[in-house]
Image (cartoon, rainbow, N blue to C red):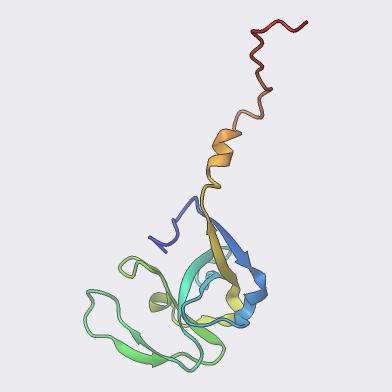
Length: 132
């Protein structure tokens, strides 16, 4: 999903309300169980919902073909079409594999682990003034 979402380090806010395709639409970014790699999850953008026609074309590979997304499936693609492993490789994604909809990308969260890697430090007080 580069450049929208980094391949590592970005924290995502994912709503499970939308799992299994509930109220999803074209353009939504979803998290799903990878259909080819068991135990792995991926994040892609929905390009087609059941009944939609989608042109299947890999950049640089020539002419594409048009297919209709079957019932109970969606067509997902990454934002970086040249390198994305998406529905163009594994076909229509079953809506049952959708685990949620990405609502936000939380920037700055990757700074906290580095700031706390040595634990919390006690406050240092600068006491130059005599207190009577």
